[in-house]
Picture (cartoon, rainbow, N blue to C red):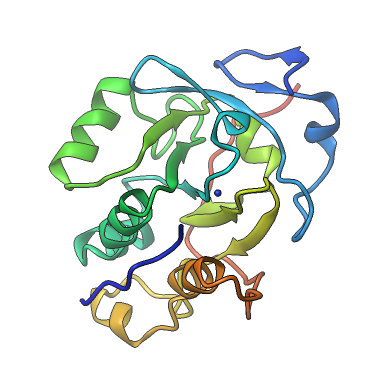
Length: 211
């Protein structure tokens, strides 16, 4: 697959699992053209990653679950890795987020997550573990992969599916409309995002039940 160069982007309540969110972010849903929900999450590198740290850069959030066949489709085809590499090379930030609760499909330790990144030749800026689902619920992330793009001013400019074909077949990747890649290309060119919101497809995220 030929990759296209893309892009040129509160914490008052402490919660378990290394995630920090302001109270309003817990109830509000993400809205296109408005500020993306702020968060701080613990990365598999042992460091905390705050969305606020990346203001001035394009940020891509990828909800992932390595056991999901829809996620596997985009990694086996190297589609996900190609977009990651383009984003990071252009100075952007790619955060892969794992919101599976402990014991459920997709849950991994930091060491396992790092092993997966290396074995798949993936290039995220960081992998964030969200076992309590704090960040995932703030973004209303429902499936894997579920994708979000945040511009340099911190506004959400895209949310939804990675592309248009809801299948687990690698053969469908080049046939699909590449929503995420198109949005990034338009953002880099200073153009309005043609399709800022789509329906994400994939495996339902197994969240930890709320009290």
